[in-house]
Image (tube, rainbow, N blue to C red; front, side, top):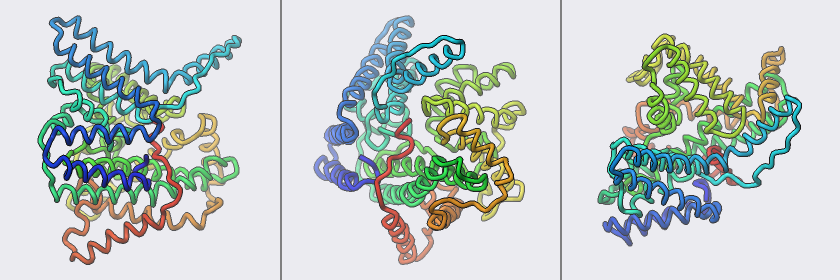
Length: 482
């Protein structure tokens, strides 16, 4: 069931009515409704993987209790590694086995040894990376005595399986979400309206921009040998906005949907394309994943403490793992390593905390220096996205080779070029609205708040019209494959 589907348009109001009107203020019943709804939502993808989700939930619930009850450190470590090992084992089998088998076979072939490792003909369970990280954060925080175990299995299951975040995040922490699950919730009209506005903006980004960009990106990247360098640059730009609007659009819908039920999820995007350096970009892009890796991998490795070589090592590890988390393909690993190289000057010269504030805060326009910094950071990001989108490393290099040729200075052209102009206009509108709303949690949170009511509603209707006009074949969100 997709957020941008007709089925979800019926599912969400049905759950909302049951949750607030049937359950009223009965917390136990509210959580049961959320859990059953979440299982139904997940089963709509493939009911067979429900068993994996339930097993993962039971595993972390049980090991969490054992960690808390264990009387000595050795037992705590034993149960911690049971959880980590089994969780990462499932993730490794479903997501990475074929990659390692193929890579190992290719490596032996280069040495003259012919092998034929069998591959698994299974599909990747949707959301496995996300709910695995939910459970791991819970047991690790228990081990570190940051939280107490949740003894009510229904409450814990809602934390892991809450349907807005189940298949593509944000990656929640038990310290943030569990207290909300076990706390009495009452309907808040203002919060619900705010949630609906964020859902509307998320649907605009997904349906109007991301889905339309996807059409042109597929045309250009899948036939890259037929196009000039200028057209390939245009394809990379379209993908840059496709992946941002697709994933941040999902996050907006997820956060807005959760707010309808009186629950606040972690912010996942903070206008990353307005970043002035790569370090700031990574503080603003996929925030829940970046902070997860920082807290559970980077800091335990030593973080930025220690010698310069340790800083370099830890930085490359974190970006290598981040790339690998996104998918079992060398292109993602190169993408991660490329971002590690980008951020390295900030690490070496200790400038990675220079841009912590909002760019041009309280102003309409950035300074010339800020504008140039944004343009440079954006250009580096676009270049890295080529590897992320390419089918293989050789495909990425062939695209870059053509971009670096004289054809870069030709007029771009591809099938559907004229049609794409309307999408370009929508991207410009997106950038203008997000720039005006960059100091808030999402772009239209306060845009138009001081306008007269008819004008403000005209803006909402214009967004809805753009969404309905762009409706077509339902397209999955990019991050479902991760």
